[in-house]
Length: 101
Image (cartoon, rainbow, N blue to C red; front, top):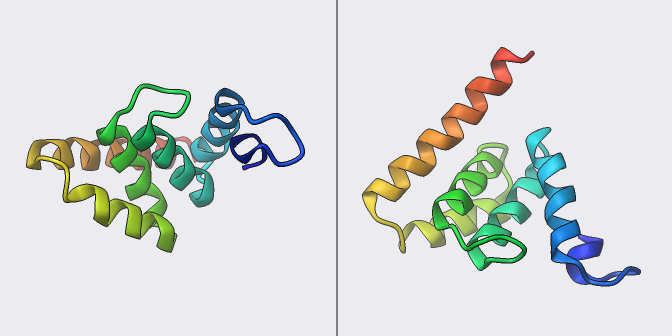
């Protein structure tokens, strides 16, 4: 969050993306939501609504209310195929994490 908003450090979306990615892969719901927002808005990455939806789904599954709202707003702009792809990607992450336990 510090790098994304430039709080106490120079604003750096690439650095923010790096830190969010690490935390999101470890299951941090807050980081997953923020990573989704970066994909949705194209900050430090190419805009990718399916990846955004995937990260929002993972965060929402942990009860993150911001992610639930973000996911529900984004889904209105996606095709059924994009939603299915995002859900499949999220399920793949969950399965991969379960296997690594």
